[in-house]
Image (tube, rainbow, N blue to C red; front, side, top):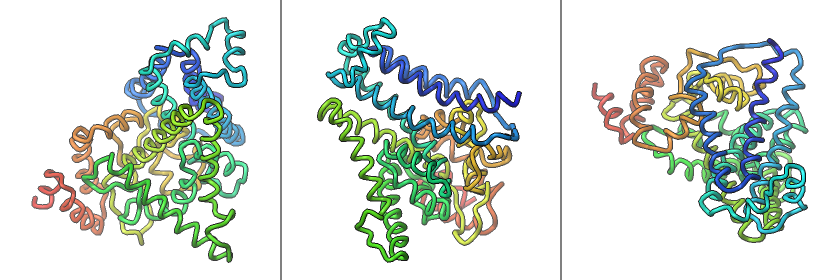
Length: 389
């Protein structure tokens, strides 16, 4: 039984490889692959219930290697995706796959309609978010481990977001659920506005953090010592690789995938802390994050779902996070909640009662006052009315 708890996290890699197969197969298989991935998450979370198990892992190094494996998998996914939009057979990739399988992937690629390439962008961006950002998030919290930091930052480079390794670890975790945190969406905010606002403010915050760090060491912010500048150059290097693979069109294709992957991160930020309030001088508690224990999301996202414990103790590795079933709960699993967040009227209809319940059940007296102020400027009638009641 204990072996299962190690193996369940390999479902993550299986979904990545499923995406590779769909992208190589071309044509309608790309769209079907996207549909299959969405079904695994949305239907799987709906049918499979919660995972609240807390196994004791005696071989944590295996779990670390599982996360490191995300980098070669991410490279394979993005290479395959960019190849699927290129006209050249880069490195003889298509010829090799055709020889090994007997399926003419080059002919299938050449016959792929533009609409299926759009599905390819959506699928690849989703994989950048899941395979890249989630594991990059886990690894860049391990600031004491240079290998994990190296792998994590390269994973984040695929979404043009190595800045995350600075702002998230040293900014977001300190100011989460306060007005000082760019990633925490105030009540009533539209998710599409949040994607832009959080990105711009997050970059500005990361620059200030990095500038202060370098100033203490007597180093210039405009130098190779600046991890933010080095990180952006890593992303530029990936764009250049796409350019060499298939020219300007392939580079633009990759940029679209990367930006969609980055947008997914900000949508996740939106739904993880929407409407939460906290005095920045008080400790972060499990109640300051929306949590979920949906089984498929947990297994395929290295327990990112156990977000309440993660913010209470950010240094705890994913396998040791506790489910906190009494914490504030999201609408459902991650992908389901992402879809709901992208439909603002539905989001506010479902989340407004949850936010009001948070005020009644979880907020301290001080937080009730902060919540009332947030309700007053939310623009959501039910929240405004709650203050009058």
